[in-house]
Picture 1: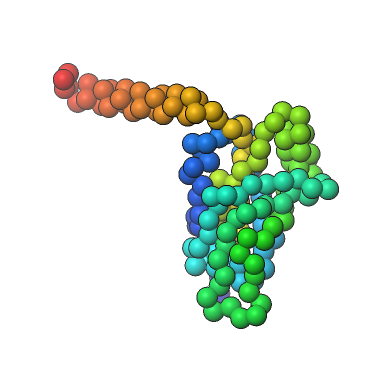
Picture 2: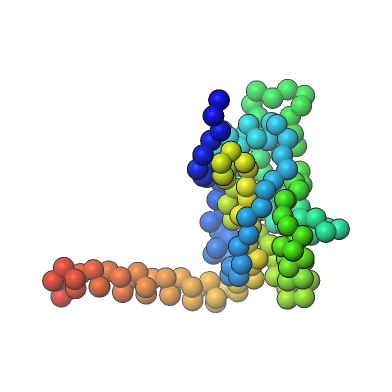
Length: 159
């Protein structure tokens, strides 16, 4: 069977972009067992409570829920086990320094297959306060209104 090409999105953490201010984004591979891959290919996963830690020079993904594979037997995996991330040593060092010194956190944004390999997009992020969230929503609404006004004006309507 030929290898898959392209990108197939499995799960997305939309709330992360609302709760955090994203500073930098990285792509990392995942170390998975067979039933996890089959469950992901079925499109089942949740990144809602997920976070990344750096322990002993290795990056680990915690609290990502990949449900058990329906047709799995005694070889099925734990649903919320910690999974190793495949990152370069320079990237791990940058992430470790940022989380220790500057108070950032690392959150998963997307889980997908890229050319047949399971990947996760992680972000170096800073938590937002409630007033920052309201300000971000107001800015987004204002830019949306400006785009609508420009569209109406370009069509010759001045209402």
